[in-house]
Image 1 (cartoon, one colour):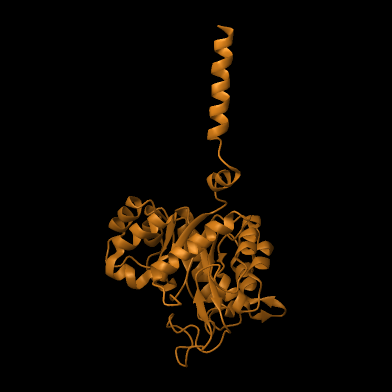
Image 2 (cartoon, helix red, strand yellow):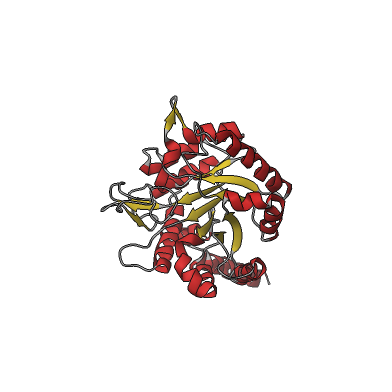
Length: 305
């Protein structure tokens, strides 16, 4: 009986050793430091043609969520159903200031009903709304009004950065002046790593210096030299002029930014969501191919954190 017991124990131990995962498998199975989402503006053309197909593809790629840039002819309710079906959380939404001001409470309730925890202002008029501009105080009043409605629904108001917010005012970034004047309970940053780098600021340094308030970050990569009309797609400022001959977006990890260091900085800063964004596809790839390459590179970089 004793010999039989020892034999069974030996079999159990051998089986356990055989089935134990290798160190690489353990790393792959360990929880990711962030959730990974994508700003649907990156796929706007495809979303207009086949939203269901895009969301299905993103879910299969391993994305955890999406950031909205409109509803593409779907009702908000039907849009959410499609996201739920494909395992995608609606993290946040880019919504224009004027749209929000028409009905702050109604807009906040709408996005809260979709599960949004953040609403980001995608743009501001540098000449009229930001620090030192004639309408700056009115802009701050608007932010407070919108933020109050958002707070009631558990939503944090964000401002999405470009390069011009890093202009210096008495030695201080315009972005920091805006955040301080509004109050960080009212407004927090949605840093765009590409535009931050274009402005000459290290995005990793920004994240480390703004610990606790960079909950979601736009991870965007590029190559070439900034110049020309880099905002041609946005259609707000600098509408005229030719595009830069060398500046071009890239999937994350395929450009000049240090993806691993930015992820390390985001982890130190307390970031919750990495949001992939690529305004235009490049290198002959489709938007979905670029999205797939980005999340592949992000997941690979996670193993180095």
